[in-house]
Image (cartoon, rainbow, N blue to C red; front, side, top):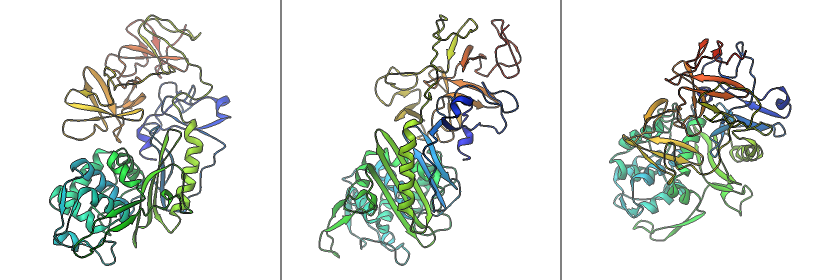
Length: 472
């Protein structure tokens, strides 16, 4: 919930539309008054692009686990949360982060040689593949051992292969978590074994899982049911590893159609933990369960059922909203009056493919300045030259100003930034020196992009304390 408050999602549909849909909208600052929102908290107009609109016919599920979230990765919004920012021990779902870093930093054909430290730095009863010091495997073999068998010494060996030591790899895990927008997570090891300094939240784990399942290598491994693990000197026969996540297996009673992959976890302190990624009809959902007492599969099924029931109705422009298109030539399909000058309508719906914010439209990753745009579905992040994603900051990129939320997603629509409202277009660029139409109201943003209030605009129009054009 705290994470959502950082995204400005003002403006609701009005009483008639609220009879048929429910909405969730969060302002960046509690009690803030934004465009289209009258003083005193009265909200008027249509839900802006990015607001969550769900059907009233789908009741929110009851989840027994202590912590849980359901994340719609396609539309970049959380559909359900329970103690989303409460810290819990993750257990072996930690290995999704380990797998992601390995996939990003290694070739599958690389050879991993296991040290004595890697195979002995374990707690009693930890799951292993009986790997011994001096054993060698490819990174590919190790990834399957990591995610299918959940072998803890394999996690240690991979960590040493990438970073030289488990502690150095843990630092890398924490750096990666921060770059993904995780604010309540700290990793102490690559396997998730009990450690007081090893914790995460359901919200943060969803961000990590989303990044992991956007990686083709991790996705391939995590969706595999069986894998033949090579023989070793101590175990001279090939062993067939089986995916531990039951919802992936058609022969299991817990099977769920559309599962892309996932990871199980359990320790005495963590209880049952589970991360699941599923996709149906072009909608990808990620369910995270923390601190469960053997209800993790039932809870996950409830979340996914709910998510697929409501995700299809979540859109930037809710059904029943009139589309109005305005341009600098003052052509409009709306009958509402407007001031002359440079104008933009927030009700405009876009079509066609995007090549990237401010790009020519070629490809899913467009180099910009000293970094690069990266596309995830219909959303964008900006990878800076230092290897981290832009987050909770404004950047000037090729002459345009963009704002990035704390979770690194590029902002669109009205946002409260540095104490003022700003409008970010569909491409992400901040609007400047122009009129913006939102649900029949007109607002003017100044040359610095800030909403102009309580005065006369450069082209001679009066606006009130909320920034609304005062029509005479």
